[in-house]
Length: 420
Ligand code: CTP
Image 1 (cartoon, protein in one colour):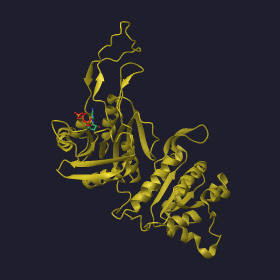
Image 2 (spheres, rainbow, N blue to C red):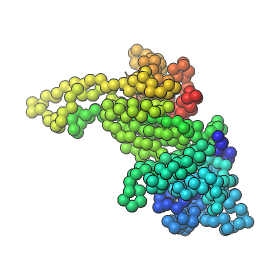
Image 3 (tube, rainbow, N blue to C red):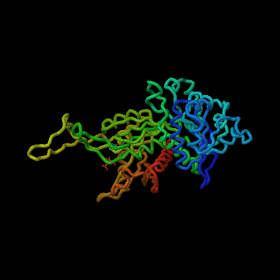
Image 4 (cartoon, protein in one colour):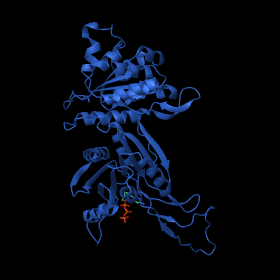
């Protein structure tokens, strides 16, 4: 398998990104991606194909990138742009990538500036395909995508939804902010000396749960919790950026879908259990980052519960919900499947945070337990997290305070090590 990151970004230098744009209507969304890349300090060279220029003209790309736009191999030939642009890049991202462009890239055709750039680039390459469902599903396109992925290229799974015209289906370009997030993940990982293979989860199917479940009392009231879903979303995004096929079961999360991730939305613990167990059947890894409600009301009123005239309040009777993590850990759907749990602990009279977590790891039967000390509600909704990862084999790893994305990658590193 090809290594994909020979170009190191030296400290202080702006990362050089080539934004390739091929000829699809989603080219207009690449303007937003370009804006995010330049505003966050990247040095972006836009390379549109001739067909892309039919959708969005060169002046737009020049204005948004702050640079002249190279559109063909015959301009400024003395600077050898067809070689130089690719050689100097830290990242090449093609958004949208059409079926035609993917076919050319898979077969090494090089008849314009973007395709020559793809052949000369030795940095990570990300394709964000967008096309009609039939074109995406065609065996020719799927074979080309498989070829590119086997070479270590990240081909983001298209989103489902409205396509050009009246059609809906798989083939939409993911939201520009999420393609941008994927680019950041890839650039960050490529600049980490320890990274040996960027798409090290390619060929792996993973399930991540996120958010907090709701248990309804009546049509408008529920018992819930403070989970924001940020850590679960960071895990899903990180796994997709490492090439995994990702299903994210999201309970009541209002965050945008991470690029390339299949998102299944649920509300209650029973729904979460059903979707996680069903997706786990074909998964190499299951990560339970969600906070399922442990109890649900024994009865759910079909009508809105009214206040009593005498001022009394009815007691709510609760019953326990199934423990999903325990179920999937003790009844593994596949041999070698890795199961990761989370534990939010405060410590109490019966033990310290870590003592309670060790006992929880044994009780749940999972392979890894990511332990957060939540005394004071520290991690809820915060973009940062710190944790200790406990392994069933007795090992433990401290993860210092940092972004939830950084913690996600440490978790995937530990999972990856155990997968073979
Ligand atoms: N979990 C689960 N199903 C539940 C409750 C929790 O799968 N019904 C999972 C969570 O997703 C998390 C892990 O179990 O990965 C730990 O959750 P936590 O609430 O800390 O554990 P509990 O089993 O509820 O233990 P406690 O008695 O400490 O509340």
